[in-house]
Length: 233
Image (cartoon, rainbow, N blue to C red):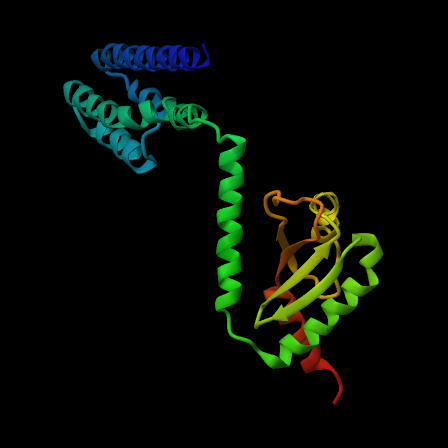
């Protein structure tokens, strides 16, 4: 019904435009016969380019009634596609609304693909010792101070140039699922963007479970380097 209603509305709008064009032409013919200039209303009522409308009005002042009619008919004809396009602008929105929505499984698959791409970028990034070493210590301290909150322990931190990976261990998969969002939303000292995937349920969900946290720190690194450069020597 929504799609049919939109098409009916656009059909009615097109009919209105055609009626307006016809009315303008009738007024133009009547005015031209009487030696009057009726075309200004017709040109103004159309979504024609301003320069073209001005040219039509200027040429009409010098033309005969018959030439005026021919000139404005040309303007109306050239302007019609833009008028139709304005009326039919809802077509794209309608097509978007008709696209099939992703299922839960498809959304999960896309998320895992994006997570894997981020993980690959981290592994491929070179290491900058001057930034990586101090940042790894900050993360270890942060996780140590929040071990009770996360109900987990960090078993490894590795930083590169603008990214870091932290391996976190929970007592079970259930505990990881219950607490991993605390890690994602935590404000760490480095103020990096955080991404995490606890993975699918393992064969033994009661066994200790580990997951990798991706920290993307490009903005934080820039801020740290600027602060270091401004610090008194």
